[in-house]
View 1 (cartoon, rainbow, N blue to C red):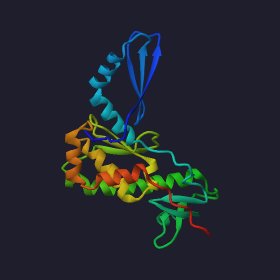
View 2: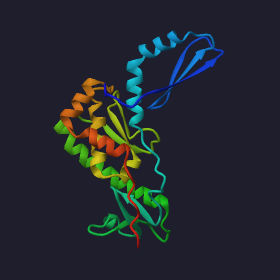
View 3: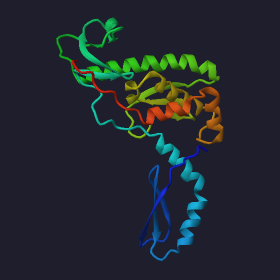
View 4: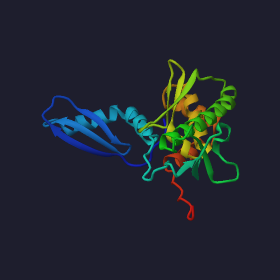
Amino acid sequence: MEQITTPLKVNILRKPIKHIYLRLRSADELEVSAPKRCPQKYIDELIAERHDWITQRRAQLRDTARSPSVPLLSTERVLLAGRWYLCQACRNAKAAGPEADSALFNVTVRGDKGLTEQHVERQLRRYLSERITALLTYWEPLMGVKASCFGIRKMHTRWGTCNTRTEKIWLSFQLVHFPLELLEYVVVHELTHLFERYHNRRFYALMDSFLPNWRSLKQRLNHYEIPDYPSGQ
């Protein structure tokens, strides 16, 4: 189990109920709903009994995706793989995507339609899908595992998920904005779940063997600072 060193704040709410309920409001705050006359020692005993669940849930909450305070895509600009680009419409699908050695991101637009955020997002999804495919092609034979397929969707609480029954992995669309090594960390993380469903000692040992620097990558991802938009653009 991953160690979490920050203290856990416990808030106890006395209510007209018969049982004790535990709920993690955040990675660092536990809410306890307890009967009005419930002795404190019973609450302490339950928290101690649920220690493993609390520790695992705190680790999961620390893995959650964050909603940035600035828009990362528009019809004018987009943050792609940790770098800002100016968006411009193009008619040639082969030219779509970021231009090499420039700060331009070409977005395919058909006919006489103007450039919209939907066009930009669609182009970003294609770019992200290509990067994920390349990472899976590299990592699956290296790890000795294979996902049945993958999908991309907008997630508000996770960077990725893995269905161990169907062996399908899902990646957050938001990952398109971050450096590629952070996307790589999430891909390896989800593939590792095909060996081990839970975040336990075996899972973290496997991550150590596959990607020894995964902890620093996780830290960067969960605390990534959006770069300032270059002045003059």
